[in-house]
Length: 141
Image 1 (cartoon, one colour):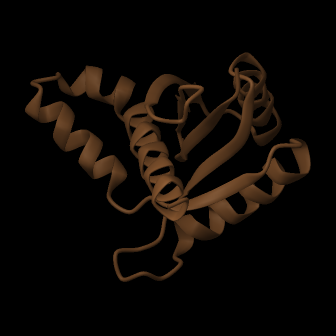
Image 2 (cartoon, one colour):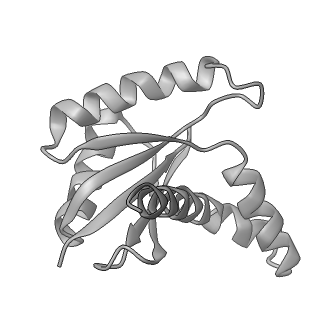
């Protein structure tokens, strides 16, 4: 069954989330420790294959003011490399505040600082995917 894969790409880690086949729910499935672009993309391609992903959604780090800063420029190169490496459509979606929201949720759940570092990126990827799925559903009506 097909799914949609979402990535929260950071400088140290990439959070990975996937939708269920009905594209109703977003589930955190993993985290990739960054090494080099070729290795990172190979690991992402493994997730794409494992989950039969038909699309890849990548968080676009727009500033709070709505402009494209240094982080967004770094993602530009990553997205272009992804598009050249996979056959699935690669879609960017505004990810403002997803990491902050994920951190706040984990703190509210009394998750330790050490454990938060291990899961915050995949929770942020889940939030990115939930936003994407909600927009698709809304635009489909």
